Length: 278
Ligand SMILES: NC(=O)c1ccc[n+]([C@@H]2O[C@H](COP(=O)([O-])OP(=O)(O)OC[C@H]3O[C@@H](n4cnc5c(N)ncnc54)[C@H](OP(=O)(O)O)[C@@H]3O)[C@@H](O)[C@H]2O)c1
Image (tube, rainbow, N blue to C red; front, top):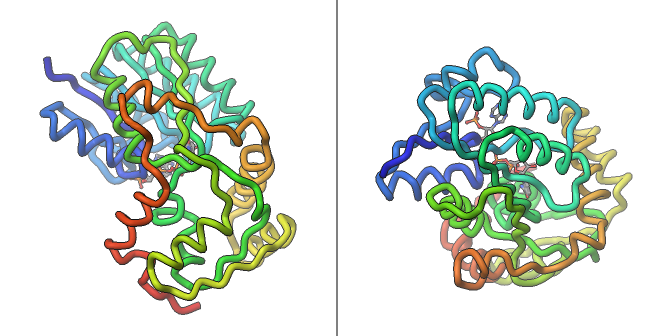
């Protein structure tokens, strides 16, 4: 049976990969995006019923993060609309080790709709499709907490897991924790990217206060600065997050993607060699 599946953040790092996989399997996919028609915008709840109309399942990625003020209320309001519209399955992307995100998970788990939570550690793709990319392109990477290790996970693995959950039974009420196969710190990552690309990447360890101060100076919005501060403190600097899990292997029957495989795949796209003037 082919499903009608709504993928929120359908143009983002995990969502776009999930959309591709589901379409390739012949499912009817609605891309949740501010630039689709009907449009999905977390800040415009009046538009949500039209987007959820006729959907059997929904993959939820909240923006910018389930830890920000207002996320709980938005998630509660969305699940209410989902219930009214007869959506039968929800998969929520959450973050590992975020207390605030866990409150949102509970709201979705208690929504009365079959729900699975996918808690992911930081994505590999943050270095090629998100906030860590511009400094790499500029050739100077200044980051705090450089010795802390995290089990970066590949967005392709997350997409494979989410598709499996969306299309199969047996995952209701479960919370999966997805990590990559090993722990890495920023210095090791930047050194590996430099080696693979042949670029001379300068790495500068700084304090979190300096990092936050630099973002403010660059005019980064206050809520984004708050979120980055939160992520570096609560998520990265949290021993509970510095562990490798085997949920990806249990679910997919194969090992998670190693960071070096991700580096090899990304290097050939040339994205790290697009030199940007500062
Ligand atoms: N990145 C990580 O390492 C990581 C790790 C664990 C969990 N997570 C969680 O994953 C979720 C996604 O985070 P991400 O950083 O990876 O982003 P992402 O999935 O790459 O999503 C970016 C997308 O968000 C959409 N978006 C932005 N503002 C929106 C709004 N007001 N309404 C609707 N859509 C909006 C944009 O889509 P359009 O422009 O098409 O509207 C954009 O394509 C977050 O909840 C985050 O906490 C992320």
